[in-house]
Image (cartoon, rainbow, N blue to C red; front, side):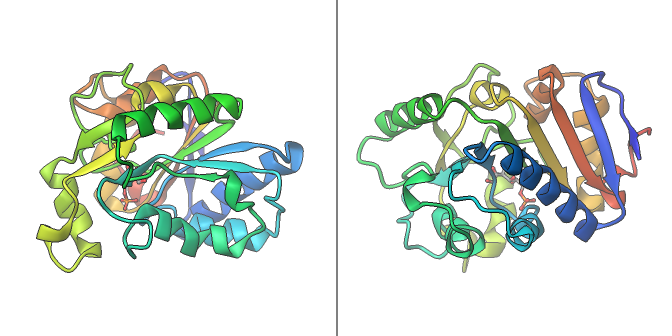
Length: 247
Ligand code: F6R
């Protein structure tokens, strides 16, 4: 089903989470077949887990591909099981022929985080920019770790996590106390420069924020509404996440 309100946004509703994951993998695999040195922007979190499984299952070679992750917790070493680096290693890096030198993720242990963020922006630029960027969305509308109120020209930088985000992510840690308070994230300005964006959302819990993203007034209080300004966004939903939008 294809519909949607914002003219530049293409909405696709899939039957369920498995179908959504397969569809996302098919879009990325098709890009990589066409452009074997594609540059991918990638998220972590629960939403894209099925996508990574499905992408691996396509068997497409990622030997020429570069990846840039959206974000990383500040102060967690890569070896920590909940670092986003560890997530990516488990879900993708170790299961494909991606070359380690082409897998980029901000270094949450950098001695100088501001310098690390500048270096990261420069690396994206040097790679030719992101051909496609996959995004999840927080219940509060965050994309990457750009929390409500983030200016839309923000670049990769250090941010403080909203309490709601820490609480949402506490499910992965022994206690809320151990969830990092800060992260390094691509900025909304960085995100909007991706040539194509694929926003994934699944489950009824995301339906209210998806209504905002697709039909709400664009405003910094809901960071994901910035995507209405991008010329090439596809919003890929399962039926439950699509219940509150008009199609
Ligand atoms: C993760 C990220 C976050 C998540 C968002 C949704 O790299 O940047 O913005 O996409 O918090 O998380 P899930 O998918 O766990 O609901």
